Amino acid sequence: METVRRLAPQDSIARHEESALAGKLAGLAIVSLVPALFWTSVLALIGPFINITFSMQTLLFVGLIIAIFLSVVFGSLALSQSRRELE
Image (cartoon, rainbow, N blue to C red; front, side, top):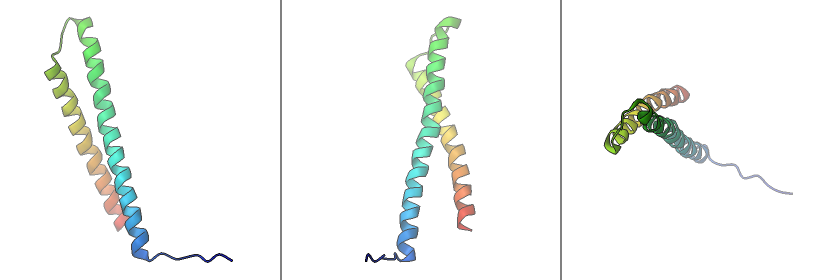
């Protein structure tokens, strides 16, 4: 017969928090980087059709601003959800 070893509550909580943090960081990267890359590439592709050429510095700046904005918004939402889960 096999025996089941029970984990201490601290072990299971610590493992859950580590995996939740990794998941939230991965979500933060996806939520902020994918739209930033998409809209920057759209801007770079649409520019020549409307006779505007954007420099690489401008495209980098636009992508960076989009990524920062989305990471702040998603980070605040994830933080508020984490606080609600702890209560």
